[in-house]
Image (cartoon, rainbow, N blue to C red; front, side, top):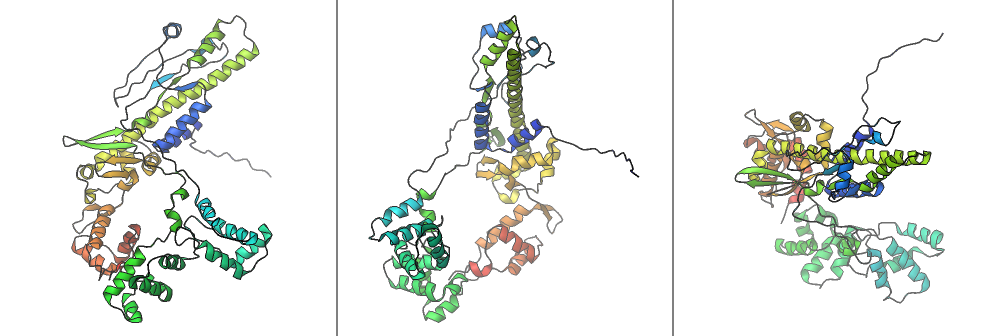
Length: 487
């Protein structure tokens, strides 16, 4: 027997417009500009630049203007009654023009790298060698296997098999290794190595063979593991050398390039400069926040589209094709109006959110001392501005602010809180900064272990467990004590 059951369910769904607005808010300045250009391409009813005034147009259509001085931007609202053109459609009026421009003193462009690729650069050098047809094919295949760092990380036997299957070249492991030696003679030094040890040794071979270089070669060849783990005492004993001799040899190794491919400019694809979305300045002892003018483009509705509607109104006969055309125009006007409104909402959301962050971290922005950063989580800002946590997250995760102390990623100002020995809430960023300073000031011949660091921070009023010290150290990308040791 079938049972019927009635369930009451409350669910919240975002409209497509709300989803699009969230996506706009998340975009940093450069990506936002690309989104504007895409919309201008896709919607012919939307135009960029200042809108030209037209007296005849103003006489024909009723306009209402309003100026909003809250953020120093002017917004012109224009209502067009599309009911005059569509007798059977109930359509509300629309704001069809908006001037959201604010001046931006600095025009920044994204530079593009030019020239040949890294692999082409290697192939050009290959032409200076006398190789048989088969050897050339093998060499070109090896160059094609070089990664962006300059390494060939594939096994030689795999390369032999691939040559047979893809190039119809049947060769041996010995022959491929012979050709690999030729590839490893190309510039930059170290290219074609199969691991870091080989890469560094290849570079040392190209250098003048001074005693320090020769010792560096021996260390890399015979005691690479001791070197990477900084077992300096073992190295001194193994090679019967002085501390100064070891120091000179290590200096030679430190000047080598562990990523020879990365040093070639032609290997870069696009070099992007960070464009700050906000700027904070100190004026007469007070903080001043501005939004990058590139986030406030000038957009308006195409006059051609309004003229089309005017022409339809004056037409005595209304055919189906004309009706279809007006429906299309209305759809584009809707999209354009929404996009202009969404940009205005985006501006307001960005400004309000960043202003709340600036006020919360006022001490830091006035001094630049990271130890002045207060504990701050997304919910703190969301509660202040009356918005959702996800909205604050979208602003913080992808936006940058230009401060008197450099350009910072906004999410870096957020941190959890911990209590010091006085029971006060302090930011984990403050603790990390103190940890970083303590490690920077340590004796590098006897670097501090995590246990010792925990004791030092406890003495400074921050009772933190050793495992927490280890976690913070890893987040700061600082190696363990043994790897920080210097001779």
